[in-house]
Length: 207
Image 1 (cartoon, rainbow, N blue to C red):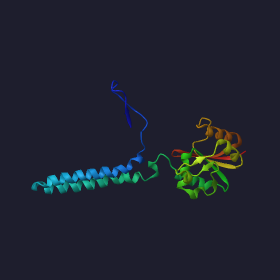
Image 2 (image 1 turned 90 degrees about the vertical axis):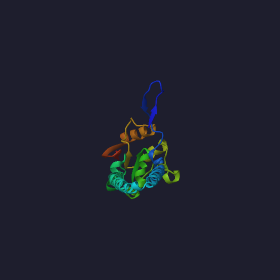
Image 3 (image 1 turned 135 degrees about the horizontal axis):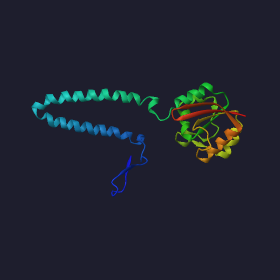
Image 4 (image 1 turned 90 degrees about the horizontal axis):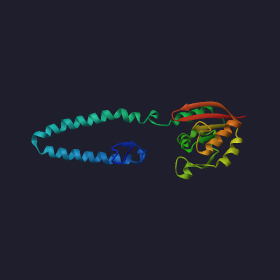
């Protein structure tokens, strides 16, 4: 969304969006109904003249067919994983194929817990030991993590930990991810790494 600068500058700069598209999609049906009502009124007005009646049907049918054909491609693409910023299916299938019973999983950060929500069967072998409040209890798709002080001892009790989301690094924020990254670097060794659209998956083995 564009946020204008003071009028004296006569310029516009791009700022952060004021809303997320999914919060306004419900209004698209209203726009379509308004457009349809307007087209109907125009048709009624034109139909009053005898000579316009035949001409109304031909372009009307042509426009409807053209609108249907033009939207087929975009409608198909928007339903594919390639249209999304994050591919949650790929990481989930990768974990399912390589996880062992008793493995732990850490989400760097809570946004990536959506993978387990969307593909619960792929996470049957792993335990989200850093989760304090589940997404269902929290009423969202993120849930709440335990404090880093509570999480690190649990990390050290695991032989293998999957990290889904950001790749562990000392440059991450918040501080909790930095401390967990440091624990992985000092007490574990990286044994597998895979990158998917918007999501990194790494596997760490206890030293």
